[in-house]
Length: 350
Image (cartoon, rainbow, N blue to C red; front, side):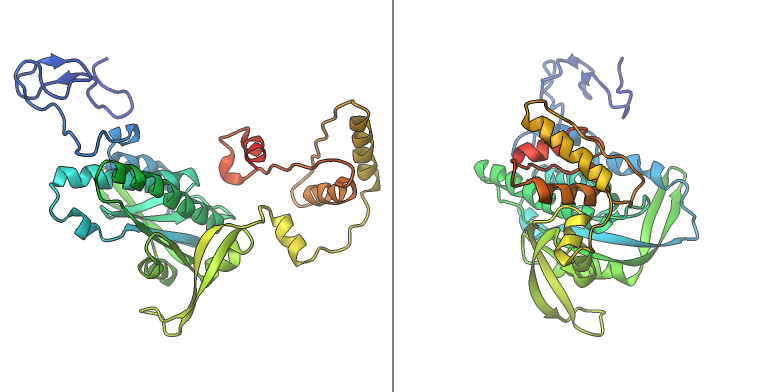
């Protein structure tokens, strides 16, 4: 094969000046000495950037092919991420050097959004605008957006450390998130390109949150904070006047993950209703535990329709049994379906 079957990139390392076929690892032509590719000042780009950012964005357009052109009303979470002081950072740098520094940061933003099922609606060159909950609807879109934001900051700290080690200036990201109703619609702007975008006050407020976020942090509005309460640790930044908003609004900074992981834990914190019935099921669980104490290991799976009380059954059994044995817990999450052992991985990490 002479071309990649996924992106049509040439597989050979042919010199554009003399046509000589060079070995793949060559950076300069062995025949005439011409540079075969741009050599970044801070080392090679990650393998994921072999596809251009444009290719990454186009690849997600299949998900918007069926979205009505006239628009659809949805509740979504919007995320804006931006490199702080990108103009000052790039001043005095050669454009190729600037690209070599900024592109990996953009790549980690895009990768974080995609990891949690978000859609990159726009790339601004030094930042991204992403939607969670559209075009694919998720009931936990607010949490997904904040997980993506935390991952962006974590990955960027590691990337900035590598930049410092290479003698380049570090990069800092500001992120703003807000949840609310918007109208989303697809706009075809060419034969081969379709834009999927949203319009509404809540999207504009997310952009304002990004501008208000302290350097290297995540700022969210109250609507997102209510949906994420307990799942994330936040610090109130107080009432803030925001341009375009008539009244001051509460702004919060996301510090990290909170102590709670599931909706049942959130409900338990608020106070659960009295547990009734399920005597037969509890007896089965107690018998399995007794056999385990006798050295005969057991696995119990509970299967039922959504919402009938599977998690509550295990919760009550745990309360009755945790004095008799060590209890370890792992959780399944909607965005982790591609990782079959994710609950066990998280259990071992803790």
